[in-house]
Length: 431
Image 1 (cartoon, rainbow, N blue to C red):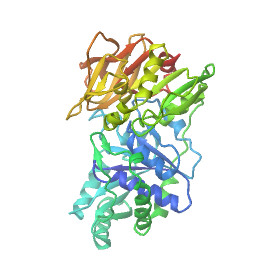
Image 2 (image 1 turned 180 degrees about the vertical axis):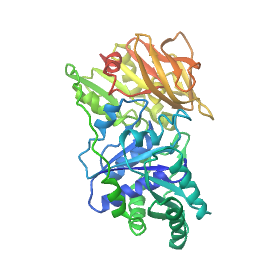
Image 3 (image 1 turned 45 degrees about the vertical axis):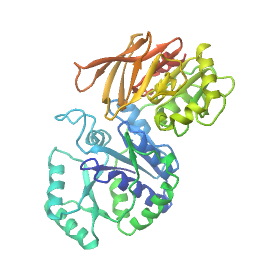
Image 4 (image 1 turned 90 degrees about the horizontal axis):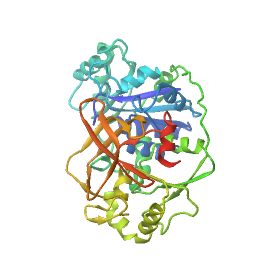
């Protein structure tokens, strides 16, 4: 079984709805395989907390069809995919490429549309009708009504939706569902930093059990067809111990990337730049993912032993790849706080997004691969730097810039990449 939960727009409540449906299914004894459309790292962390297993990103820019189909080959009772932004919002306003609808189309997944019904009744049906009639096959099979004042309000909306669109509703969530998690500059604060998140979601899901039509949702999910895919042989590498920074400051990793590295034969050895004093022993390479090092800058600076141990390893030629937050940590400083000090750049946080969206990376070795950027920070060179990347914005190919700071065996950039379709990237970074 497979279902996709989409929203009419960002902020309509699709993440809340997705988490509560996941939790409600888990409370009924079902196993749930969670997924997220697009490159978002934060929502997948909440999925993992609720479902007890990794949530995989599904992205039609970063991955080919076979990779997406293979990731959807789950061993759980049901796969639940959370959409991104508004249902039809993607990188192209006419083709709707890279939108949630594009994923529903590709994977033939029945979709539940989340609508914000606050202050409306029949007008909510007009919104649903627009979504279902915009394209020849919207894949929308039902509606989940959010932010109603109570059952009477829901029945009015349900009646209007049925009359004007013929679609059923799978229940409702009231305005009183208290799941407003705090945010910061890149979205929600990660689940790892919210110790009460799991209990709050579980309590809200118990309430939602009374207002959601779970049997109808499962019936719709059962209509999803099996997807064909072929196994891709992964070239294995010699035994390789890769140290991966994993803690509250460095939590942005695609689960499929880590699994891919292990399929290649790498042993992933996790360590914490926040809490550990030295690197694990006998490492062959280092991996610093993205995250929020700027929020933990004082603590990272204070762990002087770890910073010096990393610096020594890099100066001795250990291969290292740093991505976004990893780049920032490998720099000289973040907003004046001393970091590892290997790359000749200083990093600063800004009030607005510096880069946002899909890009193509042209790497100096000749490799070309898709990527994604999303950051408020800038890296200013303070000495001679060597750029490894020429980056091109996907939606505006005329816009290009340089990134990918390279020094000895270290490469660090703001762009987030996916390895599954590009094993050559792994070799470029570490081998």
